[in-house]
Length: 423
Image 1 (spheres, rainbow, N blue to C red):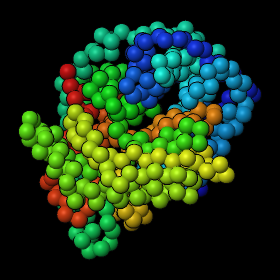
Image 2 (image 1 turned 135 degrees about the horizontal axis):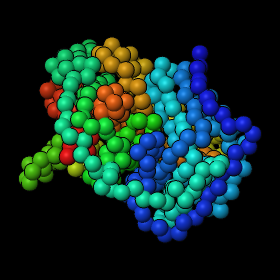
Image 3 (image 1 turned 120 degrees about the vertical axis):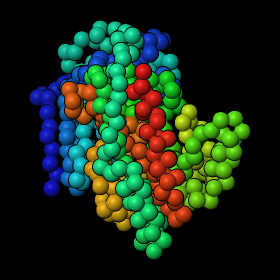
């Protein structure tokens, strides 16, 4: 049964978009400390704050209910949008649970959005929010205030117990129960002083400019994986699976070459690409899937990456959230076959993923939007007076996976967020 907590605005809402020209103020410096919403890559994207409306939903029909809710809200909105580009006009930010049936997905309609695309900047205001507040830059020094010492603690499983779960998964793969399963672990960190999301977002964006830096309802990170982008009828996705650490000098080159030639990593990657493509095919024409992945290099790790493109059929009525529901979870974050992998995750991980590894992003009133996967992320829990965060990292387990090597991979992935925490 679907359950929801909805705050709706009575009557018609007014949404006004105002072009700001070529203003170059860094988007992430505009955010207030509380209620930050963000989707930024290479200095462009959307930042927002305030809460004009909100939906929390779970159950078998969660994304269908969210789709209907957003459509109803847009139908009751008086829109003044002279730009008409993706992300202008009414926008909702979403952070969807990994398990959309059992988990709670959150959708927030902000009061103020500042967007930038192709050098053009704009501000969108809902209702009576003060649009002047939207273009006042936050002091970078204020956002960079030290949080002091950090204390780490194991999450649901300690490292050795997690390695035992990986070994069990490998044995079940060897027995033919499934082909791949993604196992994640969590890590708790407590700081001396409250965690400021602006500090974390600015540092993530600076170190990982080619990822999508995101924040929705306390979940924030820098994801390298784009689940789905919809622009008009065009659909894009970036699939990542297969990972190698970075090294120094010649060792780094060797690690890159090993990843490019690794049969194990290519097999893991193929499951992820096939699961996405198979889910998209009923909805799209002209699906383009490259024969071989490229090697994507990030400051802390490398991945095998495939960019998939297609055009949604003219007779297909599915909106972006419905398409997201059709493809999620892919084998990149769950496994293959999907249902078996999801069951094995529930049996072995020992934790509730919440919105980790779920779709995160935004949707506008035209149906355009972008959703990535909530990876390289942490949830600011509010525990310990706002000083605690829960970090996540996962690995794709296939035949031949080594538990100790997979543990090292999670440590490399944790390092992306840990670097943003440290002074």
